[in-house]
Image 1: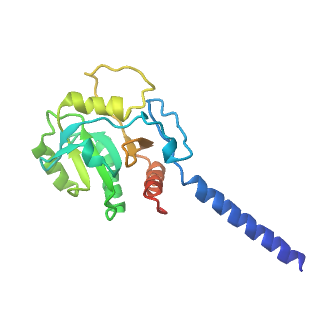
Image 2 (image 1 turned 120 degrees about the vertical axis):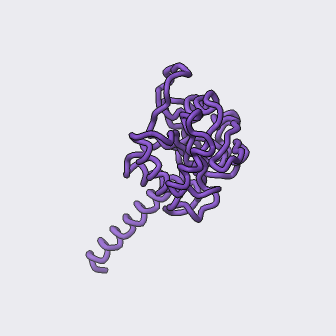
Image 3 (image 1 turned 90 degrees about the vertical axis):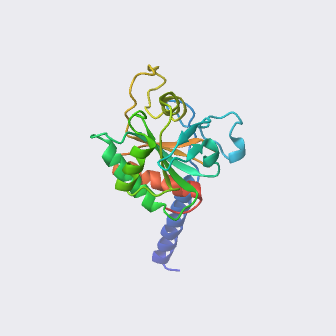
Amino acid sequence: MSKYFVIFLSLSWLGVACQQQSSTSADTLPYYQEATFTPNWFANETDVPAGFHRIGEFTLQNQLGETITRANLEGKIVIADFFFATCPGICPKMTANMGTLQQAFAKEEAVVLLSHTVTPAQDSGAALADYARIHDVQPGKWHLLTGEREQLYALGRKHYFVEEDLGLTKSPDEFIHTENFVLLDKKQRIRGIYNGLNKAALQQLKKDVSTLLGSKP
């Protein structure tokens, strides 16, 4: 046997081994349960403690006037953010990027997008309906949510940890303004947080959604 053929076989085996290792590592995403976003790793789904952090109960309304609760998230992979319709700064870019995600997973019924307003006094259902028409928000796929301010802010700070404040306490009167997107699995557990303005972070988010779907990105 030629030594060159042996070297070729060795390199081929090494390439397969590396590919298998990469594929295996992509099969598992961390779990998060507090504002420091310290990753928790579990070998199997059954190893996740029963009391591990999930998004809590809520009752909000979407741009169509429909009531959306946590029950609507059962069995769904969720991409969530916090915005307001009249934001002149980061929100337009965030909305555009959510639109890109909406398009990327348009055929995946298990994937839904939630955008929570942080100015519910201004962002009524009618205002959000107008915003949805302007930004081509697809009913059933992407919900623009409004409701009581206290509930929306509790969701952002105590459930999604969307500001990444490392546990710092904030007054309920302080405004939420963050570019972060948060990924939930089908049991409403946090599996990732991403900068919604960063292209590389959005690509990683797409890959992580595909991992939760059990398919290749």
